[in-house]
Amino acid sequence: MIIGSVTFPKIELHVHLEGTVRAGTLLQIARRNGVSLPADSAGGLAGLYEFRDFAHFIEVWELTTCALRTAADFRQVVVDYAAEAASHGAVYLEGIFTPAEPVGRGARWEEVFDGYCDGAQQARELHGVQVRLTPEIARGYPLEAAAETVRYALAYRDRGVVGVGLGGSEKLYPAEPYAPAFALARDGGLGVVPHAGELGHPEAVRTALDLLSSDRIRHGIGAARDRGLMREIAARSVVLDVCPVSNLRTRAVPSLAAHPLPDLIAAGVSCSVSTDDPAMFGTDLTADYAVAAQLGVDPRACYLAGLRGALCDEPTRDTLRRAGDGFGWPAVAAMPGGEPGNHPANASNAGDAPKPRPHDQTR
Picture 1 (cartoon, rainbow, N blue to C red):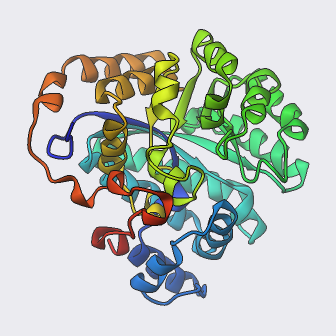
Picture 2 (picture 1 turned 180 degrees about the vertical axis):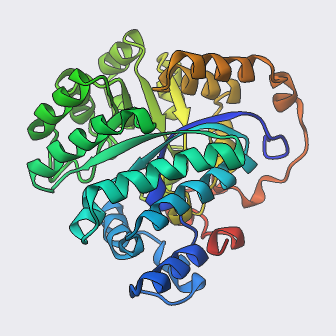
């Protein structure tokens, strides 16, 4: 099924706003803030985004996202990505940001939250995309930073913050020490949306379900190694936010053929589709949906999974439901056109995952 020639409504629940900044814009921001990056051209930055493994991706993330320093930067990245996502049919986004990182570089907590929340409001006004925010606890930072992330998330609930996530190396920093912070978030009415099972470990998914009482799990593909766990996820109606191109680019999966998304769907697990860090992985929403389609996943099923998993209020959910109900989904499957050759779906293995395309190298 070729879907690149039809723009249909999409809900994206797993996108790191820091990882959406295209290379040309990142260079402009870095110059504005007097920050030196490891490359001084869009092409040079694109070359950095050839990841050996997940650890190398984290290393490059730290070297490049450090350019984001001010409320103006944070606001800009939300508005810019909303414009891009809208061009691919996005009607609703849940953006991730990690406040402890810029705070560690000298920003104030209020400056970070104000910038992202202002950006979410402006994105809606300019581009018609509903943006909600899920600040993320960074594994490896002091536990006080986790608690502070939650406290500020609660304080900004009326500005579009709907949940709290957990990101970083599961291997080096297990989830257990962060349980009190997530209990605080849940008690305050925020959703719990950690990363778990990205690198194939079902135990991490189990911990996210049972210890953190997750409302949704980012990635979660490690659950495919445990049939009982997949059945439980399906029975509990927990949505997994799957990012197929990301999994190829970080080599979390060795090949597209080995991706567990079809197994998860076959087990009855609801899976939304997202880009994760589109600028760093040379992807976009259309491309990731093309990968999902090549794996046999129906675009409407992805939309419905996003609808189920979204942490928005019920009036917003009703609006999203009407957008989905009013779209002619059979036309998506029926379209014969489109040339899939440039899509990441055509990478036969992680080593063949495509280099960023020209539109990824500069805005």
